[in-house]
Length: 92
Image (cartoon, rainbow, N blue to C red; front, side, top):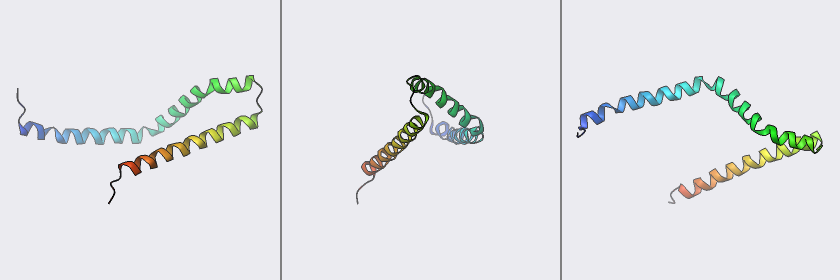
């Protein structure tokens, strides 16, 4: 069955409404999602922390390692985004 142009255009408002509802739901659900993401992060990091405690690494060293690893990841992410922007930006 062929779709007519009227059918195609009538589904456009439905898509917009759906997108708005999804964004609104995520906006108001951030109260739940942020603690959930933090809990997931801590759950994933627990084995590494247990290993570092087992080899008797001092607490200050563990904290420094965590800080610089996070800082390095943030710098790497920013560098990747800047590089991606430079590639996709048209040259005039």
